Length: 151
Image (tube, rainbow, N blue to C red; front, side, top):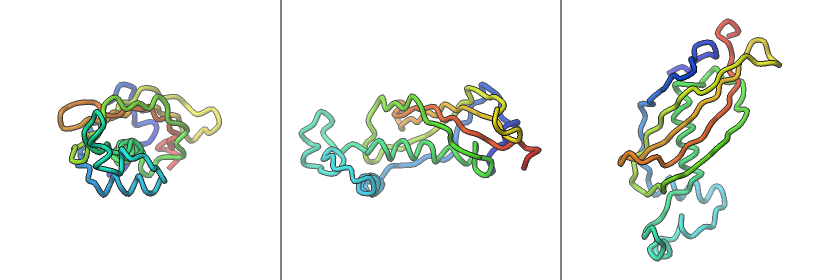
C-alpha cells in the first residue's frame, strides 16, 4: 500500500481509508499509561460511571493517533519528508470502548516547496467517524512530500 508523491495528489481528492478499527480497553489503557495521563475518566470504570457519559472515555490521544496512522498507507508512506504541522484538532464526540472507527482524508491544499525543489507541501483534512456515523475527530495535517521525479 504505497503512499503518493506530491505530484500525484489533487486538491479536492477524497480518500476513504479501507482500514477500520474497533477500539479495545487495552488500546485505551496502553495509550493512557504511555502518556502518563492520570485522568480517572480514562482509567477508572467506577469513577466514570458517575460522569455524564456513564462509562470510560477513550483517551483522545489514541483517537488522534489512530486517525493519522490509518491515513498513512494511502497518503504518505514512503513519500513523506516531514510532517510540518497539525492544526485545528477537534474531538466533537466522545469515543467509547467498542466503537469502530473509520477515517477519511481530503486534500485541501497543495503547493511547491520554497526550500526544496524536489518536494512539495500537501495539506490534508482528516476526519474520523464511529459506527453511528458521528464525527469523533478532525484535524488538518501539513506535510512535505517527495516529488515522483525526485524518488
